[in-house]
Amino acid sequence: MTGTLRQIRSFPRPIQVLLINQAGINIGFYMLMPYLATYLTGHLGLAAWAAGLILGLRNLSQQGMFLIGGTLADRLGYKPLIMAGCALRIVGFGLFAVSGAPAILVIAAVLTGLAGALFNPAARAYVAHEAGDRKIEAFALFNIFYQAGILIGPLIGIVLLGVAFPIVCLAAAGVFAMLTGLQWRYLPPRRGAEAGSDRPVLTDWREALNNRPFIAFAVAMFASYSLSFQIYLGLPLEVKRITGGQAGVVMIYAISAVLALAGQVRLTNWCRSRWSPGRAIAGGLALMSIAFLPLALEPDGGPDLLRLAPVLVSAALLAIGTMMVFPFEMAMITSLAGDRLIGTYYGLYNLLSGVGILLGNLASGGSLEIARAAGLPALPWLVLSAAGATSAMAVRMLDRRGDLTVPERVSVPERECR
Image (cartoon, rainbow, N blue to C red; front, side, top):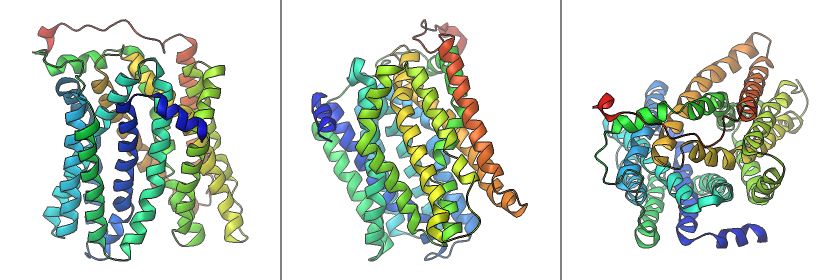
């Protein structure tokens, strides 16, 4: 922990502010979102499909707008987009607090999702811009604060739920209000790559889409997005099936956060000293693939704690694999972008990852129950493991071919996009 604090202090103030900002974003978000579906269907009495629609619109408005958010960051600067996103979260969470009307809930969900599309690519682009040659170190710290927010947020939320759900919403909005003030006061403005440019936006998008090494990397990572998301979908469903409650879900999040807090910096340094960035990513994906094998070997009987053990082992392996991948993955995006149009590249990458998560969730979420009913409970986990192994081999192949290096700048004649 001392080494982590020393490394945090070694970075300039903007990165320190962005680390605090990311922890705050996740604290505010996870105070509210894990309990929103229960509130909508329970207290407000909405049908399950209506609650699913509201949550789906939130995700769609975020994932679908990532590319636009990243492009705006490149053209308007990183700070305005980060502040605008946090301000929108204040409005969205405030609407959840004051009204249960379906139309208002839909507006709140869309605003909440759009907020993430604005500040997410901008914050990552700002970190990459400010970190210079230390991007991998900066994103390792970024993941520590990210995971800390995921751990702290639900704990605060469950305490405030004892008062009332609108109090949770207002408290979450208050967190984002403080973050907006923090950014206004302490975050210096930074111009994006296309600030003041009159080049058509479609030219920027076509440049990213024509960047073959970048697209190849994004496609190779496609399956991995769904793997990492299983800590929010497949593993919680297994905990509920085994124990009949949600208490074990907190243990999953705690494992991820504690491992990141205790070992992220050391693990990243260990990988950097031995492997290329591409090989580190492939190694992390391979470990994420192995993480699903304990679930395929889950005992049929015995006490809940024994049956829960494979889930906790899987959560730990997934967390370590993600810790290996994330810093190198974020730095790789900027490298393949040639350190320009960083917001646009992060936006496009997040958009593609959202598609991967959506398709993976549709496949894994439905197959878990179907496979168990068919007497093949291990099948979905084996399929996820195979998908992870395929992703790891694809990244390793790109690394061996030398594709995961800084590309020549891709130029697109402007007249093609006017």
